[in-house]
Amino acid sequence: MPDCNGEIARDMWSRIIPQIAFDSEVVLNPMLALSALHLHAHSPGNAPMSLAISRYLDRTLVNHREALQSFDGKLTEQVWLSAILLSNIYWLLAHQQRPDEPYELPFHGWRMMHGVTTLFLRRYSLLTELGYEWYGHVSASAMETHYKLSFDSAEHLETLKDDLADLMQRFEHQSRTNEEKIAYSEAQAYVIAFYRAYLRGTDTRVLRMFIGTMPIKCPPTYLKLLERHDPLAMAIMARLLVLLVPLESAWWINGIGDYEVVARDIRGIYELIPEHLRWCMDWPRKVLSGEIDLNRQSTKAQAKASRPSSQEKFT
Image (tube, rainbow, N blue to C red):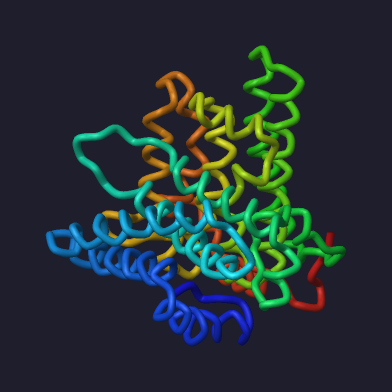
């Protein structure tokens, strides 16, 4: 299960949540569905696992709807855990390779994450008392600190800023509403804040949590732009998605096999964008191919080799 932050979170996934699953089908069925999906990702030709995903997912949805309709304090924890597991399942299913179907952005996954956020905020006091936390309602600005970046990391951040500034400028001629302009601006700020946190050395486990949830943390207009396959909105998001490349892989967000996330999203977005505007995907595609190296460890090694540590500059 997810590589969680802290001993409490790990204990929940390794002991508490499995125990609850044995006591409640509301939690057991989504756990079995996610387990079947994990096995199917490692053996795509395994027909029984494919059927198991459908069977347990169907049961999960029935139980989840019934639990929501009879929502009370007793079922809060089970419904909450079911929602979390469903968000993982739909995120991966949205990226499943389907040769006969065109690519689509993972809207089902985002909607499930939005639902988890709503549920968490509705029962915030109770869930936090039980020791649960959710990252879907936390903005990227929460990762901002006053720590200064090293000279080399600052240069990498400026490269990203320059790319985003050029991207925004080249789309300036298009007519936009004020709401759309605000959405683009906040999405751009989200990406910059995230890269700054990454280059500063923020824990990978924290960073992963903010990548897939970007569309639900930006203004609602941004998600509407993505639904219209707006090239600029998709290009901005692609610059965040490729940060999964240098981060240590975790199957529940990176996917694996037929459920692989990053390459499918970047290539899919590229195909959705009109041919004359595909230049806007050059930067993320170069990251995906390895032409642009975002690995912060190699960045540190290059900085150490290129100048004495005593002469390191800060910005």
